[in-house]
Image 1: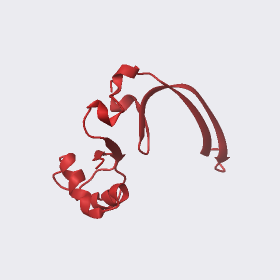
Image 2: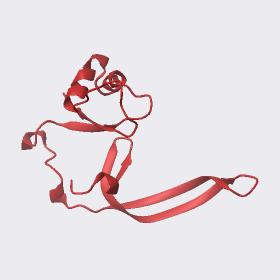
Image 3: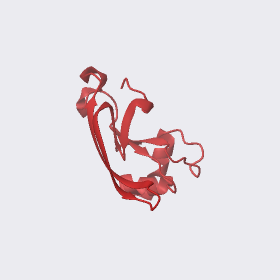
Length: 118
């Protein structure tokens, strides 16, 4: 894709290149001193990359193996990620090797791991 990680919208495993076209914010809870501590936010996005920027979506189109992207959160380990993705903690090496992870005990929160689909 032509957008950088900094210009991409990410929420869980969802990632796309877009610009914000509308946003509203309503504060719903305040401290006694008037500091807002809770808000409801509605955001609308418009995708800003061309269709040609995306690789072929059909597995038979020859673009290589199908894969997913997983964003590491605090406390994640490769074995638990492997279990969540494949149903088998023993497949942690598949993820480590695919991502060139040298030390599987030191994942960083926010780190992106490509999860190959077997």
